[in-house]
Amino acid sequence: MSPIRKVATPWLAALVVSVVPIAAQAEEKPLWEFGMGVGAMVFPDYRGSDEVNVYPLPLPYFVYRGQFLKADREGLRGELFDKRYLELSFSMGATIPVSSEDNDAREGMPNLRPTLELGPSLDVHLWRSDDSGMKLDLVMPLRVPITLESSPKALGWSFSPRLNLDIENVGGHEGWNFGVGAGPLFGAPKYHEYFYSVAPRYATAERPAYEARGGYSGMHFIAAISKRFPGYWVGAYMRYDNLRNAVFEDSPLVRQQNYLTGGIGIAWMITQSKRMVEVQPGAVAE
Image 1 (cartoon, rainbow, N blue to C red):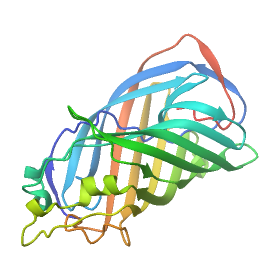
Image 2 (image 1 turned 60 degrees about the vertical axis):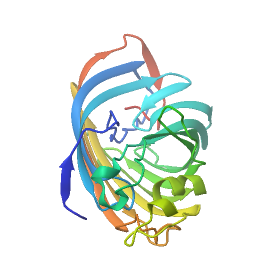
Image 3 (image 1 turned 90 degrees about the vertical axis):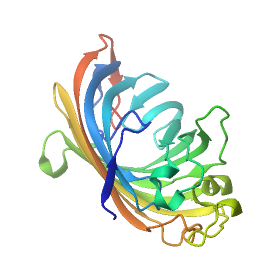
Image 4 (image 1 turned 30 degrees about the vertical axis):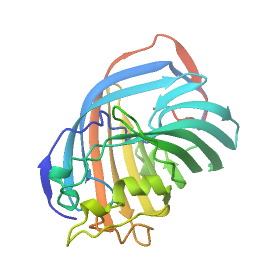
């Protein structure tokens, strides 16, 4: 991984890295909780970039436990279908903007606009321990990325299925929750073209023209740990990406095939709903 070369505050406004405790029995919790804190993340300009950035972040903490709409460590989502072994929900993701003036590989090329990714996620609950302290899920989000600019552009689709293992009270440490996930990534031709294609007019001796294809985008592995204290929450995560055999790995914009990213945050509780709702065992709670 190249050295960190700059410090910036990105468009991304929140870091959500908590791993969720799983209650053995149904319990009542506030309908919503809100807090604020600070965090920091380290990651490259885009997957395959060798220019790494530190991003200090404000860290809003928000949990909403409605019957349909939910907001927690899995993001903002609406549960469309929820059964014991199968759940259909609404999911979202995002990428940050990149200035080509500050990225050697993209010098002279158009800037990368931030994107918002929206779509359904089909989650299969594969296994639960007897006390619901451990769970294994197959999570399959399919999203449509859209650039955030005056004339937004749809970038086809992205698909990132993964296996998730969540463990409550890891290592016997009360309240500490650990999660790990791994899976392949796939993207449409338009999605890969946006990040990895080089139009002939932007080609140079060191950066030949290149047209990216759709398909396999590599693998990613993520691990996170967190704890909710009475008045505050702390969490951290690490992610490893491997672009070996990705359909765009020979793009001149891909400068590294393996890299490690991470983040850490703390948030203090400010207020919560007076209304209480029942949280079922195994549910994502905070």
